[in-house]
Image (cartoon, rainbow, N blue to C red; front, side, top):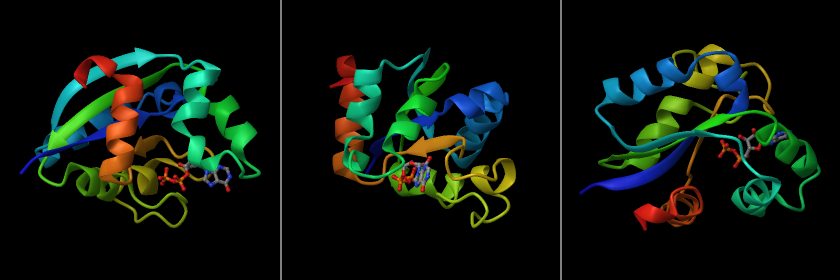
Amino acid sequence: MSERTLVLVKPDGVRRAVVGEVISRIERKGLKIVALELRTLSRDTAEDHYGEHRERPFFGELVEFITGGPLVAMVVEGPRAIEAFRALAGATDPVKATPGTIRGDHALEIGENIVHGSDSPESAAREIKLFFPELG
Ligand code: IDP
C-alpha cells in the first residue's frame, strides 16, 4: 500500500542550501521521489496552496514568503508517505521540533520552517494536482 505526498523545500530552504539534505533524508528513509521541480510560485498558486489559512493573520506574510524566491516541489511516494514525511519534517514550530528532524535541526522561526508536507490524503491529492497536474 503506497501513497503520495507533496513536499516543498520552501524558499528559505533553497536559500540556505538544504535541498540536497532534504532529498537525502527522503531517500535514506526509503521514500521515492516521483516528480521534482524548481520553480517560483505565482501569487495565485500560493493563495490556492495555502487556501485553508486565508483568514489567519499571518496569511499575507505567508504568501509573500512562499512567492519570495524559488522553491523545490516534489511528489514523494511510499507506504504512509504523508505521515512518514511529516515525521522527518518535525513540528511546525521549529523550536518545538525534535532535534534530528529537518525543522529541529535547521530552523528557529515558524514562518521560516524549511519544508512543507501535505497533512492528509485529501490535501495531498489537492496539492499534487495544483503543482503537478500532469500526474493526475
Ligand atoms: P504545517 O506546515 O506544519 O502543516 P500549518 O499549520 O499547515 O503547518 O501552517 C502552514 C505554514 O504556515 C507553516 O508551515 C508555517 O510556515 C506557517 N505558519 C503557521 N503558523 C504561523 C504563524 O503563527 N506565523 C507565521 N507563519 C505561520
